[in-house]
Length: 374
Image (tube, rainbow, N blue to C red; front, side, top):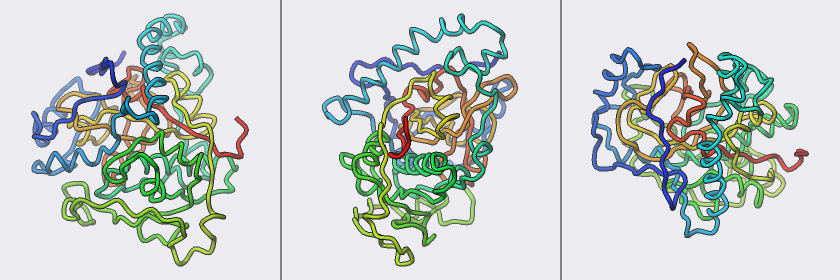
């Protein structure tokens, strides 16, 4: 079987997903992490120098812009309860599920003991199933803004609209509209993906595009930047702390001919997805959004199946899950990040599947296009 890294199962009374953030410095330097990972013969992944060793921890933490849920906020209570239920079911049933799915080791690698995953392929990549949807291949750049919670949801909505419309809709949903206008979130200072899905359902979201793309009603106005040691873009740290864009109810792209009201796309049924339903959700409806704890070693990911080995937590991050597979007998989730395509494996990464690595399986969340019958 596979080498299992540190299993992060954090039991807190007040919050279902929470890892304390370390902002005063890392206990293991970014430079040392690369050597430690690559010299570890049991490591299932490879590292490289994605970030300069002197990169401020406050900046690194700002890239992980998903805020912990707050039990004192009524908007969060529903999601907190769903995550707590997911954790309880995981802890109570995961071992029993494996026993019940005891047909073969190969089958276990495919389904991870989940009966709902029976009959699904061993390897699945949404980009291959729906080649007519260009958004699936898009890797966003959130810039020097803690907008992962909005960018990941905007990208997943784009994917799901294209898939549900059988390729009729091929544009992008505006991450800027979500980051600027979602109530009870903090824009570039962080937010929560479920509230972004809910905003899509209650208000609707207009189309958009990348910075300077002249695409859609409200394209992203925050410039892409180099999050990494070397690259063709301006270094993100030189941009300084970016302010959240102003919420606007008009199409500010002069090249776009539609009106704001006519351009709005609406969704419905925002909800959390239990671990054992996630694979079928992706297979039938397209990518979903996951939340996980970012550890210092993840920042230096290059390739392979990530498992936490070294370093502190710097915060929570929201990403888009494109599929799953098995690599060298190690099951993984295939995930798109939002730090541009210079990071990781052309902007994507793989993370251990079935063991709740870095709490990635506790916070799956989705929504559906309003016109879809579900």
